[in-house]
Image (cartoon, rainbow, N blue to C red; front, top):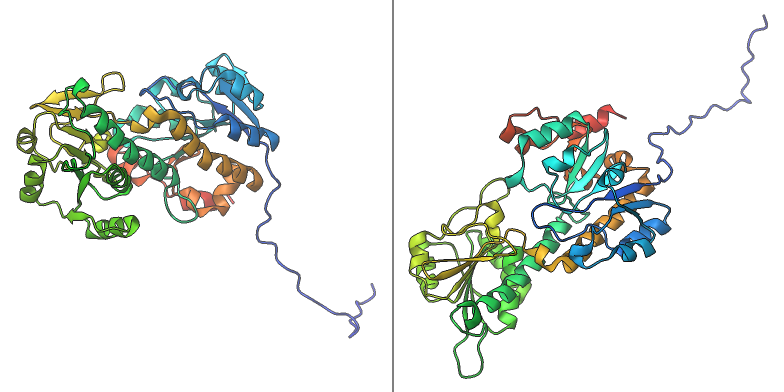
Length: 402
């Protein structure tokens, strides 16, 4: 055996270590079922978005009449390149399911193993049995409410809040008229007549856009919130000085006595909205005035509020008209569908470029915030506490699969 020769002519160099190779783009197959629960009229992808996905090589299957609530026909989707399915089971064969309403028990029976679902979650309507069955089928689930973008905000929630905030004043104007047994006043008023008085409780996105619309109509607006930062932000965003106050029962009760419209727009990150308007305060309000409780989907912030429907949207208590429809954006379904689609279509294209959602989760940290189930593991701490189910940290799960 000859000994190896070591010569100064040789050069030894270290090679670059390959840490992570981005996979090639994946072809997605997306299913969109027709919604039959919670009076849902929206559809998560509009025909224009479907056309973009199909032109990028993806397949979209839509259940027949899924878009009729938003006034989109099967022909609109078919011409955009989608395949129309006449059997719900065919739609649920797609690896990615996109819903505009939460997953309910009727949907769970159709789910396949290892599917990815993008939908709202609606914590107040969530059932333990539904979560357990999804865990058994190793589902990966993303919620609309917790989906973050690169700026750290929640784009779908913000869009729906903007719609709800703008819509509440249009709804209030409708129920103030004499035909609906309202007070018979014009929201905003005209020259020589004092403006309509509007009270908004909550200075978030809903409160801000309700304030914008009310002021544009000429109403006198007063905003209450216990978060002084939100009140400052509201004034800065509006660019004008608005009457604001922290929620002090004496001041709030006094203002409610003389208002024509009261809007409840308080939110709570995890749980029920606080009740800040008592039944006694409502009893002291003027007959024919209107209460719109936007936070009714989290219990409501008026003690007298009740959940109503789009078919029968109002009830009258103590002479005050109460509007308690929990899904206001669904009443403006075409606009809401367009807003949701604007967020989801780029997200799907990004997932494709990354090689699928499994790969995208590794690279896209903001996406992790929206995942509450990952391959059957519950990764939302609030849901695990509420239903006493095992919680698993998502970051550890992702790292263990690399």
